[in-house]
Length: 200
Image (tube, rainbow, N blue to C red; front, side, top):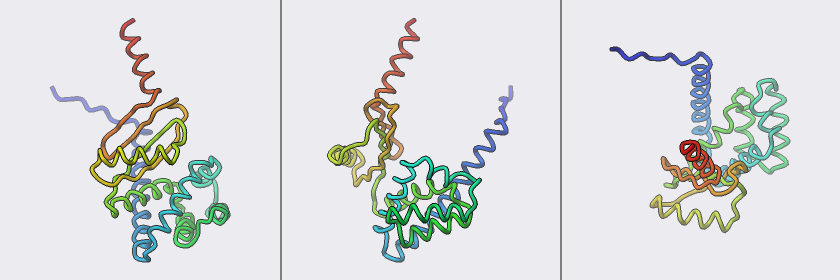
């Protein structure tokens, strides 16, 4: 008997198309920024400014709203972001790049652009990016120790991308390439709850 294929609901197809569009836009713009930075011998300066922008977006819900919401006009976004970047010391190539992205109405893809730039830079340097999520910010000593362990596992240089998620309660979630290492308390509690349900 022929297998019956269930069509995805319209909202799921729309979300998939939107994600695909955002990913494509992010990669095109990030590639352009990387090429310009490499050609200008400014990779380290751009890397520092990109890291500053990512930290600002992580810390400020208002900034994320300014970037993501189509309600704001391009002029409003450029004005707001210019003030934020000036205060944070984000200048030169990255500042001009962000203004161009805003002018072209592509700011919705900015988080993806910054993440993709980091991935391109890591590949250029022969590094592996480890995405680490913890319940609390990792200290410098903890990050160094983690880099050492992960570098041994990856067989090469590792660069950390850190995130904080208080709902983890404790422990870490680490994505190293295609590998996932989950030592979070939240995951262990969920496993315990499932085991208790099965035993009931």
